[in-house]
Length: 115
Image 1 (cartoon, rainbow, N blue to C red):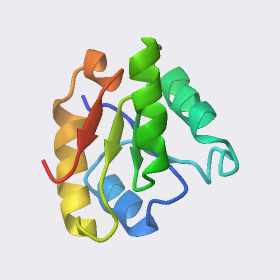
Image 2 (image 1 turned 30 degrees about the horizontal axis):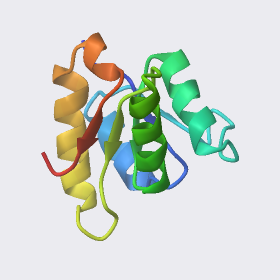
Image 3 (image 1 turned 30 degrees about the vertical axis):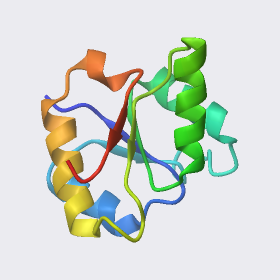
């Protein structure tokens, strides 16, 4: 069983398609109609849905850090820098995370790609 992923608006469609071809459950911000949500609300939305949030937006890292400082629950954020991690590497690493992470690991963490 794999953990479901949530893609923020900054994630290229090629990553979403690649993960779906590998059998990973992926929901995009676009299909969830949350493209205009502020980062704090996007983190809450992903947590409500029990999904790990993938982003290439550095602002989400600041939001996650703020949640950690305040001891507030948040969806785990997986982050990859746009110019440093290829689409193929994102797909491979996100598949590993989705297929090996436990539900407990879907909350309150920040994971950087590449693994």
